[in-house]
Length: 130
Image 1 (cartoon, rainbow, N blue to C red):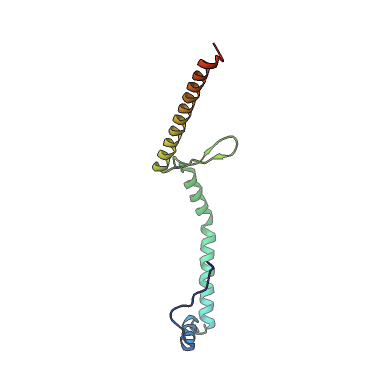
Image 2: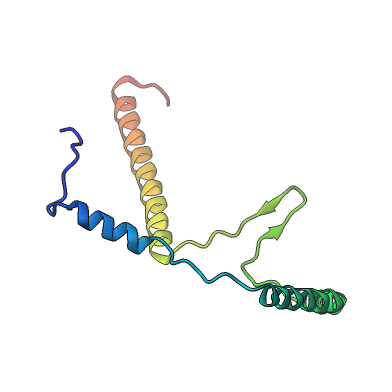
């Protein structure tokens, strides 16, 4: 099966397309006067001056906030070589992994017992040991 382009169920007419283009175009804005542009530039300059004047105080506040910061309990633990990430595993996934490991251990135990039983049976007939 190949990917085939499917036409839309509604055919568009040229009038629809022109109407959509007209709606999508932004409306023309009124030209700004020199006075309004000048006032806007002055407001921006004033805001920047205030921000520059407050920058040292803001930096000091940020440093104090970071100084009093206690990382969350599940934060990465730093070791000598690199960072070990703490993996948070959903409970259901952890239970499935635990069941899988128990099942593999039981499977190993059963195979070891079967192997021992077969070796014991063969030893009775062919006297490999003792």
